[in-house]
Image: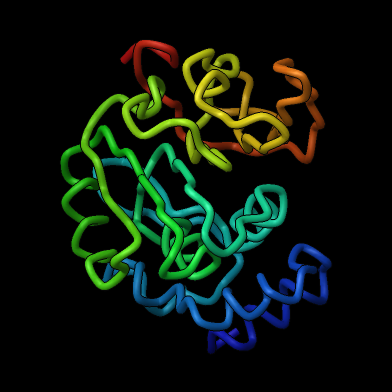
Length: 211
């Protein structure tokens, strides 16, 4: 695949991307803008790629599945844990629009700086440096939460910061191999659905893995 349009059509053909509004969002969000120059030629392949400090940008198919599970909508307030390259955040920012708000928390200094630069044009996005496993209680509650690193369990802090009847998308399992979960908050309790096996870098923090 040699263009963002071809990538989106590929994601649609595999049914990883299904919602019309999200298809339009992915069309607007060019993955190549978030890829380090050394890997630019691979921007439209459905594969994870290295970023900085031993971290990766997820495969587009995984970004699509996670975004479909989150179902971000115009005007919502969303929390992202793990800013990474900024690609997932940009997708969400396009979905929630100018009246929405996205807080994205990054604990790796190099990635915090990278994401802040890549997302500078998105006025609805605030990149925060800190321990994402603790969420962002001062900005809670959220209409949705998405975590782009693997956790040993669903952090209580994140679930507590989720609004009732809203969605938390998170990889949970071992340090480098997890199940991607969709967790809904129903009557204050978690209702969990397993989506697919994934391999994310670990979520390091007080309610994640130890360094």
